[in-house]
Image 1 (cartoon, one colour):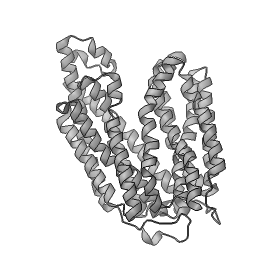
Image 2 (cartoon, rainbow, N blue to C red):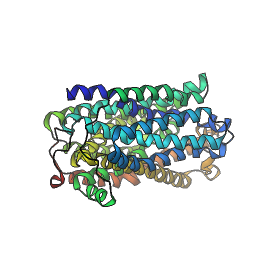
Image 3 (tube, rainbow, N blue to C red):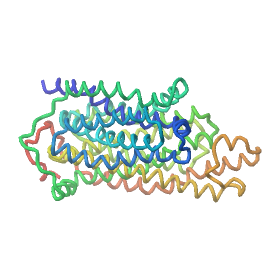
Image 4 (spheres, one colour):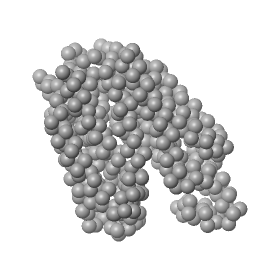
Amino acid sequence: MRERSSIRALPGLLLLMVLVPLDQTALTPALPEIAGDLGGLQLMPMVVTAYVVAVTAALPVYGVLGDRFGRKRMLLIALAMFVLGALACALATSFPLFVAARVMQGIGGGGLMVGAQAALGEIVSPRERGRYLGLFGVAYVVPAVVGPLVGGLLVDAASWRWIFAIHVPLGVIAFILLIVTLRLPRSPEHPRVTFARTVSVLRRRGVLVPILLSFTVGFALLGTISYVPSFARIGLGMTAVEAGFVVTALMGGAILTMTISGGLIAKTGRYRRYPIAGTAVVAAGALVLGLLGRELGVAGLLGVLFVIGLGVGMVMQVVMLAAQNAADPADIGIVTSSVLFLRQIGATVGVALVGALITRIFVELAPPQVRDVASITPESIATLPTELRELVEAAFAAAVPQAILTVAPLLVASIVLAFLLPALPLRTHTESVTSLKELA
């Protein structure tokens, strides 16, 4: 009965996991239209920054509040804020109102990220959760891939406002599903969350190591793949559509190993080997990409990205499982939000640092007359004289791999951290029947 109840709740939780990445990626192709309509072209980066900052700030707050006042209640509040923020974005008549609505939506989005993962941790035991890792991966990966396509189609066919309007019916459906199907185990008491308690939880090696792994992998991975489409378009001459879908090779590899490793984890109860293998594969793939760069060609780039994806699939969801398994179920919100928070911080810092490195290297390599990076776009490069264009393309094609090599040592640190991950027995229950402190 408990397993059937858990399965009934999965559609609503998976829909929540789809909403956040779909919102982030579908917005990307619409940014120029939004800024142009609302009169804020010079403030366009604020659209992304406001949302990311709001999500990041909300993650630990919802984790603590969910542990204290109940997961389902906070999840419904976060969903309501996300939907109302999306509706306000669709109806915004000025740029300040739009940015404020994005902040509201981001606060809700942070709650959805924590709440969905933590609720899954409460209804599915760590041992059984392995069977669903592939499904969870699809729920995150597919929106990340199709989001830009959906956003582009809506902008071309109707208006950018429909990107936000579609969140309203999806959110209402998710709200109803959660109310009807989500039945979380009742705890006899809601422990007061204090700073000392939080520190005590996060100091356990079984929790701390997965959190640090989330930071290092998020830093190196997102900092690397964020610039791969630009590298493919400028360095390898791919079209905008082809470059946009090149990351699907990575996503395909990740889904494959998430599904395979998840099934093996559920069968054997062993998970430590997968982050070790995964971090090594990611590091090897990034090293090949950094050393060969443009020499890979299109087929080689796709192959390397697929290999990196194989490694990612053995790390990203498994470290969440390991962290939740190492903590008492009463502290699952603290642990879940910490993993997501450090992953988000790592990704943000990684994208910024790798971008800065690419800019610096490009300025050093590019011809003097085109060193104004702010004016460099694929369209502007295409208008340059043939000889100059080839020099610019070569400079950018060299800058991206060199920047990737610069962050490669952090991936080596990820391998070391993976070896430090303790091999704790995976729980076969979700309720807090015993303290796990002595295990970690």
